[in-house]
Length: 139
Image (cartoon, rainbow, N blue to C red; front, side, top):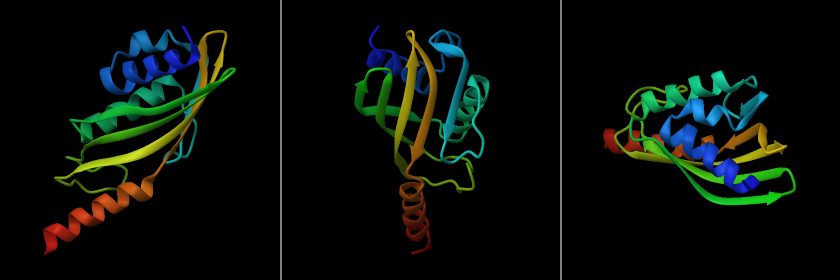
């Protein structure tokens, strides 16, 4: 499997399908995940907890891979995370509007398995969505 296909398959299995046991087989045992909104790197179980907490707050949550680039054992994805925030999440209050934010993730691959991933999320974009939603309710 190409590195691009490996990463795209992992994203779909974890973020969109919740098929964590299958997804775990695509990782090295020492896999780490770091997201700009989280203070510390996490292992796969920590990542699953994060995904499940997001899905609990945004029942219609999904991730779409917009662009994927690969060079050797490095893959970069640009993705759109979207859903309706039904419960508080990461300090943001619920909104009845569909929210979306962009994430860029840098992936390392070794011997056909994912070693780590580091995501940079555009939290400012999410904040703008929330503020627009609040203004609409107060008008």
